[in-house]
Amino acid sequence: MAFAVVDSAGIEKCDMGSETDNVTAFIPAGITLEGNTASSILDCRTDPDFGDCIIWAIITAGSETACNPAVLPLWSAGVSSVFWEMILANGDEDTGTCLMGGTITIPYAGTTIIII
Image 1 (cartoon, helix red, strand yellow):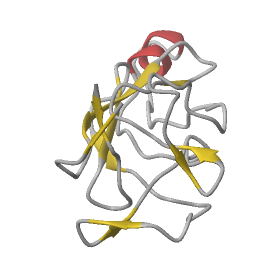
Image 2 (cartoon, helix red, strand yellow):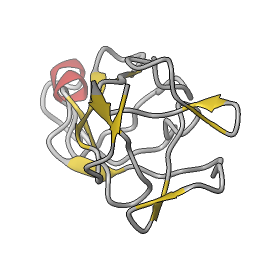
Image 3 (cartoon, helix red, strand yellow):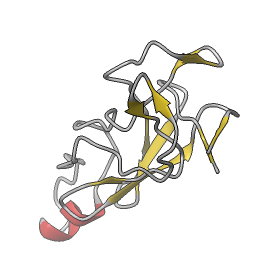
């Protein structure tokens, strides 16, 4: 069981970053949930702002550590049975991957709508 993730209200976090960022629906499916656009697994941002990056801090010996993640442009589906317009829905159990080594999760979906 997972909650449906929506644009702007949903929150994403990299376990190697110091801050959270809002989920952004790049490819809106035209579905609105609780006043916001539903997000799909294609909505993994390639340019999120997670603040300071722990990995960059280690690599650069503590100098400028602004997070500039190399994110795969796709959430890995934790819930794979719900579709928005033939695209898998984004649930709060989905994860993203930063090629630098971080894992991106969704601590807050932005809705109370359950998808299975």
